Amino acid sequence: MGKVYMKLRVMPEDVDVDLEKVYEKIKNVAPENVEIKDYKIQPIAFGLKALLVVAVMPDEGGIGDKLVERIQSIEGVESVEVEATELL
Image (tube, rainbow, N blue to C red):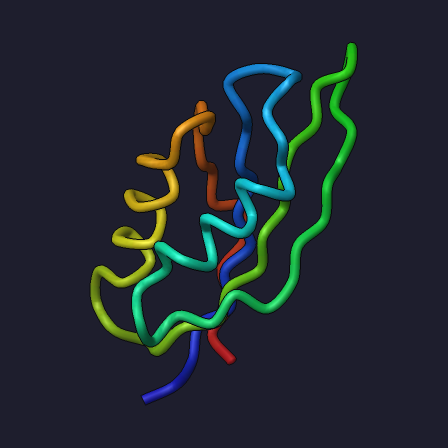
């Protein structure tokens, strides 16, 4: 079984949402076998920023969806979009 690399774009509900705190919460809610590798805060427009998160996980059915659902349940998160996935 291989590993999957997934890049996610996490959009906050408001410009005042602390994306560093959101990142810490993402690390806490990630399923046990999902490794959060890296993140970057990307300016979008008018003070709005997105959180780009890189995760590596086993190639198991549904684990990526579970990660996205858990991130969407974090307070202050508006949406989560999968930008890229690759089989490693």
